[in-house]
Length: 336
Image 1 (cartoon, rainbow, N blue to C red):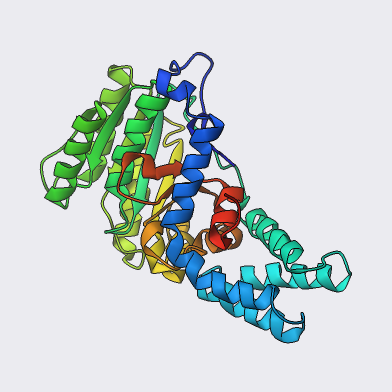
Image 2: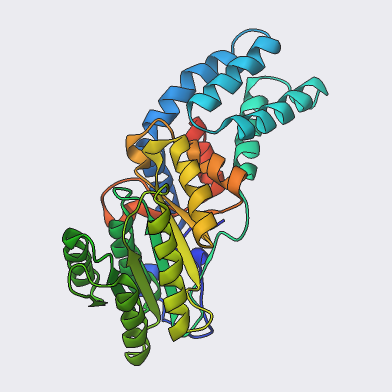
């Protein structure tokens, strides 16, 4: 799993120069600073889990009630019933076999098992194509458009890649306005269409213009839609087909933005969106405002779709590559 932006992206040989900022991105101090911020912004989830884990693993004898309480705590944090059962079952087996003695050993092994659950698929984003087309999908209110703007900024700042945005959410005027503002902030170009125009035509034009301008990456914003609205989900598949008419192998990456505060509903969204279009990765947002941070593990373990990016706040640096080990440690209050 990626620890910094250079680890997250697969680039073509010589594509994009590393900026001065990128050269210092992976320093130990910068990583420690981000981990501390991750812990701080996941405080609600950690507090919900912390007291119960302390009482469960560090106080009293380990018995059947211990495992039941641990299961309840993880399920309350939205780790998910199936994922929780697998993790606790493995932990109980290892403890019974005598391989784990004491609360510290149990806590450390629990952290490792949770991290393992989140390591599925390829957690990287391939931007080696010329150009790379990324399609962003998700339900209204998940932070999709903001995520696109932040991602464009990081692609330019961290990798020196040129980015064109496509405002294919033509049903909501505010979405286009918001993306225009992000394009200006990120210093990238944007392709828009009239309000209410066909989103497929805007996506087609964005890819066309991005290729003509020699852009490295083209990011297409799509209309936020409810996963239970079949006709709107079908439109996503249509947009994907239209993009493919410009470049047969595009889109190269489809990212689904999920609001972590929705808990298990976020898991359902991931399952249903992936039925409409191939989803390559999850962007999990609003982790700073929820006690349901365990949903990252449930989505990865139960869908096989890797979480690639997480949002833990409003600032540009609060969109970060997902790291399973750091995430599990922050979730349980371990590490620095």
